[in-house]
Picture (cartoon, rainbow, N blue to C red):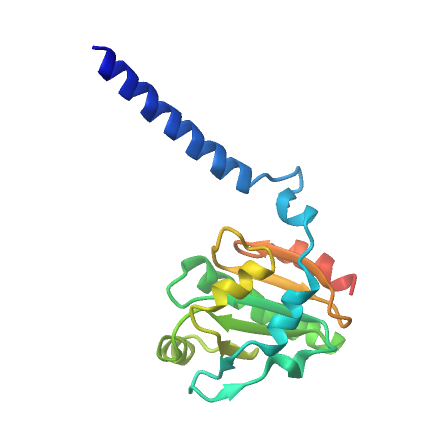
Length: 183
C-alpha cells in the first residue's frame, strides 16, 4: 500500500512540475503579450545571424538575406505543415501590400524543405519573398528568443537592425500594425 501511495505522489509531482514549466514559458500580460519575450530583447547577434543565414529560393538556388539589411523588415518563420502558419499567410500578404508604400519588407522563412515550400507556393501563392531556411531555421528563431521552438514565429526588425517585436503564434493584425506604424 505504501508503494502505491509513493508512486501516486511521484506521478502527481511530475505532472505539477510539467504544468509549472509550461506556465513559466507562456506568461501573458493583460494585453496578451508574452511577458518573458517582451522583457528579454533579442541580442544583436541574432540579427547578424539572420543576414548571413544560408537560405535558398524555393527552386533551391542560394540567396542572401543581406539584401534586406538597412530596411525595416518583418521576418516570419513558418512551415508548410504548420496549420496556424498557413492560416496567417493571407493576412501577412495583405499587410505586405499595405506597408510596401512605407518601405517595410516582409520575408517568409520556410523551416521546411525546398520541395515542400515550392509545392505549397504553387497551391497558395504569396506576394512577398519566401525563402527556405530548412530545419536549421529553428536555431535562428531560438536566437531571436523563440525558446519554445514553435511556429509561426514573427520578428520585426527596424532599419537600424534593432528587434522591435517578436511573436510566437499567429500574428494579431492590430498588434503588428501598431509596431509597424511606430517604425
